[in-house]
Image (cartoon, rainbow, N blue to C red; front, side, top):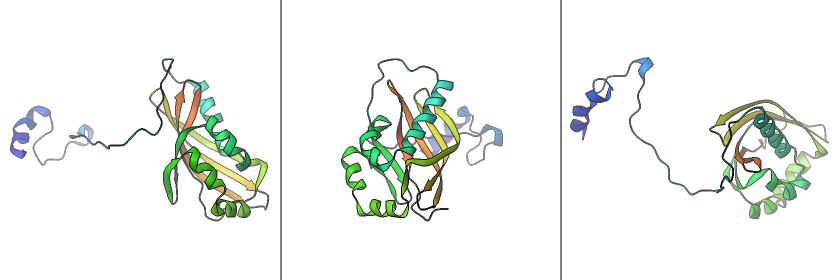
Amino acid sequence: MQQAFEKQADGLGLGPAGAAPAPSTGRMVGIAAVGTHSLVEYEHHEPPTPHGDRDREAIAETVEKFESLHPRDFLREWRYIATNPYVGIGEDLMGTIEEEGVESFFNSEDFQETLRLFPPFEPRKMTISGMQIVFIGLTRACATYRAEEEFQNGKHKVDNCAAILVKLDDGWKVTAVTTKDKGEAR
């Protein structure tokens, strides 16, 4: 195979075999693929439109709603802001968050302990700042931001976060989000 590749390499503009490409003309040969199944399937009934300021505002609003949901309201409201399922990425978590698991998590001893350590205000005293949005095609975007929250016991938490969103016919929804650090408040 190597000999066959070397015979054809001259016509590909890759340079001599084993030689490093010039810095300004980097090349890539090969394909990488990962097999997986679709977590969320959706169909656009309207053709996607180019993104603009309204999309940036809608993404910021969606992220702020998602981050500011009080635990008491999360069970009822999350499906309007995120896809079912969505992906949670955290310190010791990377997995799907779906309807069946959300309620058991909220009733878990681990989550109840978190609420005891960090009792949220209602409404939550959450500040989202420094949001940067990168569009990935017409229907996907990644938002990075800083989330800061003040709790009833005087503690504060500050986290750098990221969310990936998809634009559906009814607006932008969270498809993946980083979870907050379980460590001590900063």
